[in-house]
Image (cartoon, rainbow, N blue to C red; front, side, top):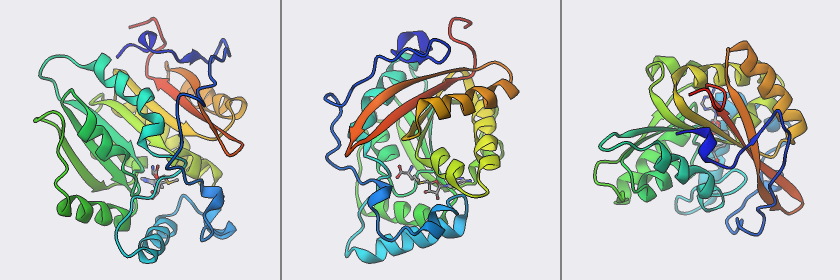
Length: 264
Ligand SMILES: C[S@@+](CC[C@H](N)C(=O)[O-])C[C@H]1O[C@@H](n2cnc3c(N)ncnc32)[C@H](O)[C@@H]1O
């Protein structure tokens, strides 16, 4: 999966090709800003397991049947950022290892599993046992078919500050983070955890792998944080691309690769 093969912008150059608003639509979008049950108290504690257990319990109780909750937006809005990386990283008969980091009850991981034409093993991991159980029950009741017969998907309760307890070093091809690092960075005591998660991602990613962070944080802020954090881990390249605008809010895809672009 060479970072050279995708259109991400090198942070150092600070170029911006973006404005993909027309290309990506947000029909299923649900912004956290509009979710009435998320109080200030909850927003400040988004690094806490109990916060999310409560969130997913309340969200599930409101509906008569299970419905995926999507932070920011759903898979359709970001699949053009994700799926080409799988194609590029695919070598015959190899099961690509994908992690949906802090999956919640999003359908993103399941969609990667069902839509990927190359074989994938998608692990959807979350610290909230409530979210994980809801997803496990949901897939038990639905026969979700993968495009590739060898593909696998699993939902696991996992604290992503300890990824190396579950995954081997350099074992993952792609890590997708939609809103999880954002949640940690915005919490009163979550900044240290966000740095730890990034460190763990770089440890378990293959050198040719990618970490994608979908976020509404402005590049001026997130790139500074990412560049400082990856510098502590040794070599890694950071880039970003604009995903699009939804109700006045701009969203971005930050791309971290363990080795600098051009040094594979
Ligand atoms: C903003 S939500 C995003 C959920 C999902 N990715 C989506 O797009 O809807 C953040 C998620 O991160 C999870 N989370 C928070 N801290 C975590 C940690 N240390 N390890 C794993 N998951 C965590 C929460 O339980 C929550 O599901």
